[in-house]
Image (cartoon, rainbow, N blue to C red):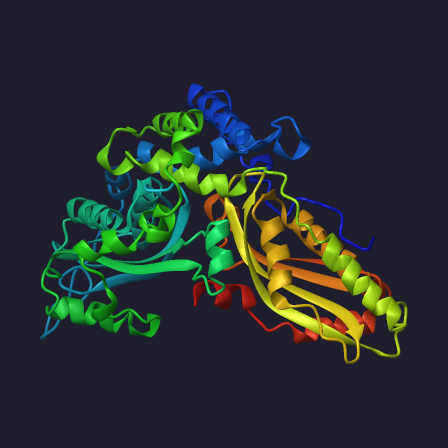
Length: 467
């Protein structure tokens, strides 16, 4: 048909990462819980694409929460080095009074309210005292210890700051986190709101010692060295406002999802609680009390409901119109039309982690013919997106369905960001993937493919999801 064969864009990290805990009781317990979740979605846990999913998910979660078994003080101890400051004149540097900053540390963590991974950029500064400094790489490692736990942004910033203050004993520590949480929509919300905003972005800070006053010289210097990152004091949220604006599971759109959805799936809720225990957490902890329900609500967006798109009538209408105009199979009276940046959200069936991005569709239609509406194409994209998916299959299904409507000359490009590429060992921030399906004339005419590809703007995935 011209479509790419289904492959495995979702990175098979477990083949190259020997974590050594496949047979541990905690891993087995998570695997069993994931099977319950898949069955609750109406899936066949023995079908080829899902057979290894429970183990993949268990590995991802345990690797992503390895910070519970690490101690920051073990990292800092042995990494302190003597370094004197300025001996003469007015000023400070080196081991006494001089500001030291490490910027743009790319990390990820799991949100304790919904269990979705979120990405963050961490900026750390400290003022040495006692004529000793710490190895700069250790600042990143300490931050990662606390990021690799179930977190919320403010507590994460506070824990990093406190650990460095106690471990290094400097004159002061400052931490700023830029956190990005996917605002994963429900089917209903994207159909009602075509301008759904895909992300929640917050800035939080924590400080100690000489950074304790936001007007202190140390803070002014710290922010001055971050100004080109767009970090300002005005953008940093207060501790009270962070809880109201962070996790989308607390938003009004999520609260509209019937509570009966959770009540009707007690086995799934219990399975998520089991996962929390296996990670070393207490499901009864106040901050985690509603997490199993939030996760189940979100996961049920991908329930295998066997819905019918009901496109037959529309397909027949288009085909008959083309035949009556004598245009089927004609090239001379056709022109190419492009529909770009159709947003999609989906769920990787290999790891049960979100992937999201944009879809571009090109097709030929007769000159003077009123082309197919964008809303129908967007509905097709959402129909196949809200399933357990792989990107290759999603691309093919969109292409074949649009082809059934418009007669066969179709090209589809899907550009996506996979959170499994962020949260599973390789931590490749900013990378994205693209897949292509070509049918009919697009499969045989390189010039047609090149013309369509030229229409696709640069960096569409990033700009459409973070704006």
